[in-house]
Length: 144
Image (cartoon, rainbow, N blue to C red; front, side, top):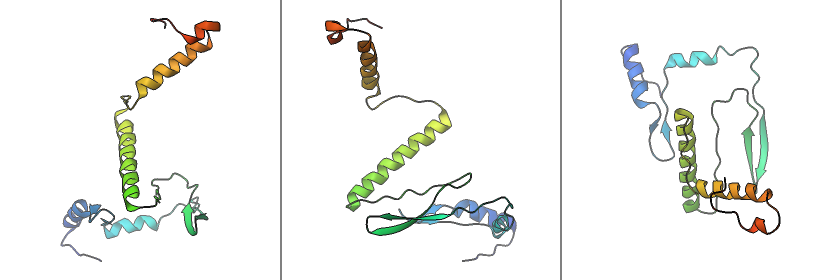
């Protein structure tokens, strides 16, 4: 579809408002200025196109493009036995990506989800390596 606007400002406003608009859970509306397509005409000579690699997963064949130079995006293929499991996996993946995004933006990490238990366990295992005999079975309170 191609829409014509009265001036560039109106076209840029349309792109700003409508690009990446979520139509539903699986579809997103993409909107570009016609001048954006010029950047695809000016590809650097040193550019090497990625080679598609066919893979067989189960009984189906898929084509993946891997080993890209300076990749800017990725695709995650979710498969499962039922829609409920796929929906749960998708929610978990979105949560994990949100955590990664927040960590990249804020550069701070608040441990959770059993992190303290794991740290204590690791500490006790390291201390136990340096103790021999019956002392391995117990480590006195206040050690460390």
